[in-house]
Length: 388
Image 1 (tube, one colour):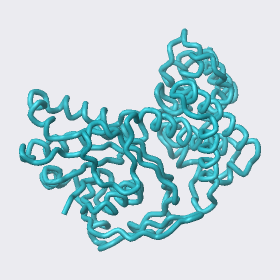
Image 2: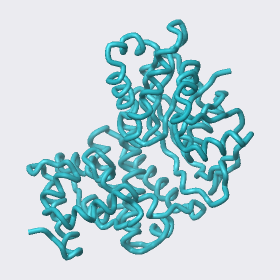
Image 3: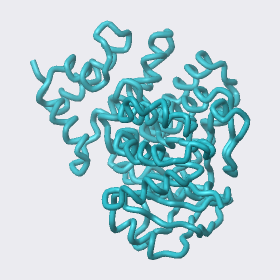
Image 4: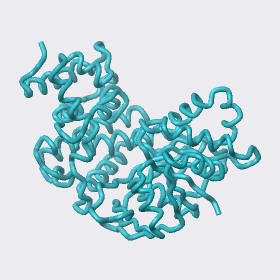
């Protein structure tokens, strides 16, 4: 029986990546640091993935167990050493904490065994490369020996998994739609069996299409929705002005994708329409607070706003709607989100140019810099504490 080790036993891990691996015939070993979650998974003999919305069905997952990587690092290393596939859904900033476990497993892996497939399923461009680089840095002189025991493949993943209803246990509610694109090159033709995933020669267009449409659009909806005082993403899109603002931002990112990757404009228009229908799914009770959290990360240089807006500005394309979305993100004031609290404090303490540079990573001479600086200053004026 093939085995997959998945780091991150949260909703995406169980309701998307783990589900597809299970459907591919893999026994699942979840690894997480949340002891109550690990215990709950181990207490269950099965869990159900509930797809809500048009065409949704219930899917039952069996054949899994969970390990606490904080308390059982040796067991995790042993599981990695014996696995066929390792995946992650932990967030890009957490990959450096996953790397030691994978390195330890590779060190234990029999040199004669087939290479371990490693894929970081994160909302970031080149996430598996980031993970590989962390493993390489921690391996030091041992890297040459262990690197031959693994295949590292970048992926693009897309499925909306909202905050779960109270009392759901380890069951997961998701939307019916999903997309998992995997670069085929590293496998040299020996592709793993993952039903529903598709393997592509060039992953970058898929990653950027997803990041600059789904992630940009989701966050844009959340930030405009939060500013309007609505509770959910679906409710936000029911407000005509918000729907128009989101559509306008995504038209600008699509224009960049057409120019940069040669994607078909008509197909992108259909893709945008599908994305907006997904966001408007009333059976996904996704809150603007959840989707908007971590604004500092989402406003960073290569993320969903500044990334496409900077490239579009460099190319002379329109960025009006993206700049407006950045302005809405700057107004995200959620006391329970540490990054939101920090952002609002920095807006109060620093001048507009300093905030623009430090938050977005843009150089003062960049064609987007002054546009962003202007919306930073506008937010500071709203707060009544603009620095001199």
